[in-house]
Image (cartoon, rainbow, N blue to C red; front, side):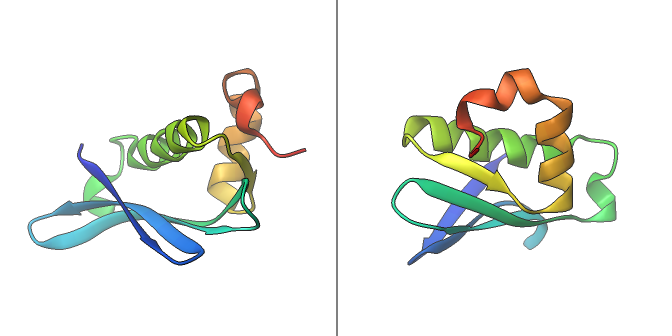
Amino acid sequence: MNIQQRKDGSKGAFYIEGNGQQLGEMTYSMGGPSLMIIDHTEVDDVLKGKNAGLQLLNKAVDYARANNLKIMPLCPFANAMFKKKAAEYADVLHK
């Protein structure tokens, strides 16, 4: 699954496109120079069962690690995944 990123000032998103349309998206805003706030995740039904949401989150986590950021998962999906995979994501979780 090819996940892309777009940034517009202090806001951005990781997204998946297919057949000329957006099929999944995880949006975030920057709460300062080192804090990424994940605020929304949405995945089209065509991607259900393909772990698209988790792949979007993993891309965000990889980006946070590469850029020395902490993540505040306000989005219910991201928050649930951070709890489920606490040990795996502990290094990027904002406390």
